[in-house]
Length: 339
Image (cartoon, rainbow, N blue to C red):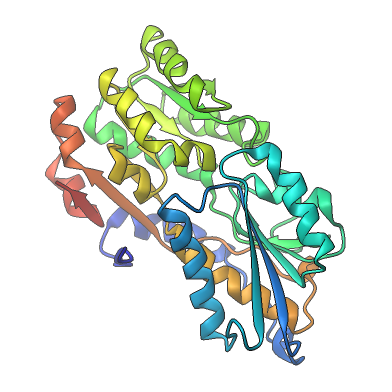
């Protein structure tokens, strides 16, 4: 799948980038001073399924990042992927398996981060994507993570307010929005949900949190939000929800409820609006952390990287089905419009 444009045209992105600009911290150049090992073995711990078409794309983006840094599989690199297939209960054993293999670094994302941390306090862990690693307790601070974990943040809580602003351009009088969240995902910590509440409150929107632990609970969650008159639903980042995006959008369509999401995969499945970082780019960037660690840098000293670009995708097909009019001004700011 082709990567989306990183155009700086949209005004909403320029405003947000200005806010984030001072938060992006570059790791010390000295991290590359030491030679990398002759052959590195990297664990890739995924909460998702290899059969989901987006997952190989994320792994390939990570591989591309490593190739750009001079790593070639079969020559000086081995990648050991482990897939939970959407069953988070499998993650602890998969993480322990990578520890037994004595991999040099474990790359993890989503719910897999906590499993990796519980499996080892010594093997470096690189978070390809984490919502707010400080609030979730994965790291101590953004500038100095501490421990054996570093990587990227997707800043989901801050984005909830922007997602609501975008939706309010379509439905100006929106007052109640539900949030679909998987409590089994440690990234969806209570602190993050509270910050989402705060962002919504500042806009005069009431959030209703609905917990979904598995695909069998999706229909019940939508029945609840419709009964409680929620006007839309925000999908928090989670591999289980993403694996079941087609089912979610099917239920949302039948319930005549628009969804707001954080990634293009949800939008392609039918989400009305998606707004968030380029996830594939986060995986490519994870390779730079791996390289620094292999050359002697300590995860504790490598600052957490914030996303540099955010993408807005509008699904016009969904808008027409819901009888919603998308303002031309919003369409002009979109990175992609799905017809």
